[in-house]
Length: 116
Image (cartoon, rainbow, N blue to C red; front, side, top):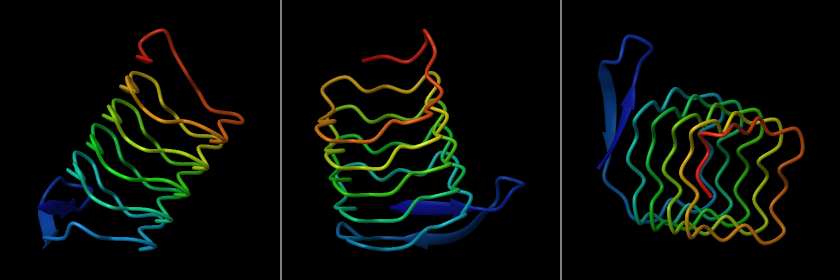
């Protein structure tokens, strides 16, 4: 179950889906959204607020996260091959076991709190 919240943190929509291939979430506020084990191949998360969201065990190959705020995001065992992570904030993100082959991290903000 994916909860979409407004800026005040109130749930405005829920989505129950395992396959969201190619869906555009561009610019959406998805703080604490749970995309665990979801197929998001080719999805567009550019300019999204995804702080503390969970993608654990999901497929985000070829997804676009450019200019997104990914602070504290859980990408543990997520497939991020060929993903665009350009100019993102991934401070404090969890990336253990993540597949990052050919992913673009140009301009990404990484801190000592980011876990690889």
